[in-house]
Amino acid sequence: MAKVAILTSGGDAPGMNACLRACVRYAIYKDLDVYGVERGYKGLIDNKLTYMNSRSVSDIVHRGGTILRSARCPEFTDTEFQHQAADTLKAYGIENLIVIGGDGSFRGAKDLCDNCGVNVIGIPGTIDNDLAYTDYTLGFDSAVNTVLWAINALRDTMNSHDRVSLLEVMGRNCGDIALYSAVAGGVEYVLTPEVPYDLDEICASIKFSQKRGKTSNMIILAEGAGNKEEICAKIKEKTGISVKTTTLGHIQRGGSPSMADRVLAAKFAVRAVDLILQKQTNRVVGIKNNKIIDRDISEALAEKHSFDEDLYRVANVLSL
Ligand code: ADP
Ligand code: F6P
Image (cartoon, rainbow, N blue to C red; front, side, top):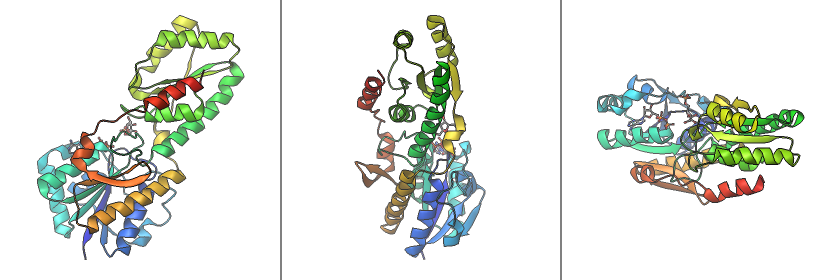
């Protein structure tokens, strides 16, 4: 029977467990033997593999995090460790590996294929939504829903006190979490790394809106778009207003995955296992225009993320 190992790597994301469950059960249904690898590439190097059956993934479809655990494993960029990982798979007679993770994890998967001959398939799992070849990554929708919960809660108290609030969200160098949360949450100002912003203009707009009787203003700041202390200091200097800041942090990475992420997880898993059965390798799955797709890893990684500037304009118009 052909064998497949599965690992989760890099920053965890809601939906990784749902995806693991779907990979395991669909692979077993297709007569593959399945192994789970603990803590990403580190577990491959350290020989931490467990045989999985359908019951190994019971009761996890709704859970955040990853039961396989995840890790950053910087030494994996070194080919010596990549060969060590490939030797582990060889010792178990495993020819195929499914990697659920972000762009860094995909680079590791590509190296395992190119340098060591392992058949790899990548599934995009990261809250950042920073992989250009796919419209959505697993975990993004859930993270944005968590941000929306925070926006609603903040809005309640900011309204009561006529305050200005700044909410910093994750995303590394990608502004998608900030942008989608701003549109869905009706946030007044959104600052992302992709679009330059003018703080003087924002200060003037806040002052003007207060004159018009607006009771609260919210700024959503993508973590890669500037320093929140500096931004608040500037607003204080220009308007005299003390901005209340909140950093949502790792709350965005946890929690029960949304319906959208659970369904996407199942669809990604089925395509990934089907690719293995078709003996394809060095490919990543994704979703484009609502259709599940797969692409060569190198091509996928070479694509530059295109920020949705139309949606950015909409965010600004709707908050006027
Ligand atoms: P993500 O997969 O979420 O982008 P990281 O960038 O931390 O997260 O990458 C996860 C892991 O993938 C790293 O800890 C490392 O083990 C591996 N990795 C990252 N970049 C490379 C690379 N250029 N070559 C080989 N392995 C890599
Ligand atoms: O890639 C996911 C992510 O949560 C980013 O949004 C964030 O910049 C980073 O990981 C945080 O990493 P760590 O959990 O290692 O602090």
